[in-house]
Image 1 (spheres, rainbow, N blue to C red):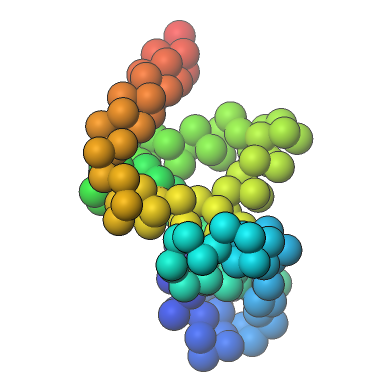
Image 2 (tube, rainbow, N blue to C red; image 1 turned 90 degrees about the vertical axis):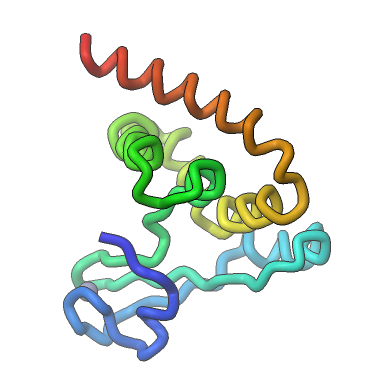
Length: 140
Ligand SMILES: [Zn+2]
């Protein structure tokens, strides 16, 4: 399940209705805001998580969505699966995912889309390679 931050703005979980929702002001977010943040010019989203059912607004593959143009593209779905099945299974992978979803992924995706759209085919080639490798491995 995935939600936008606006779904949480009422202070209630859009999934189960609980008001036990935590809103995080991430350190990484602040570091980016005070460091290179001016360069990106994007609003900083807060991350929300329901303490009751675990619903959050961060279940998105920002860069993949920017690259493939649709968060429901099959490649984006495969990358989400890769995140859950591969990255989340190891400590460094989990650290990366946490870092990525702390706002870095969202800002990077916006930056790529707005400032360096020429890089999209290059990133796409890399992601296609990863997807192909992952899908051929999981079929063995
Ligand atoms: Zn909930």
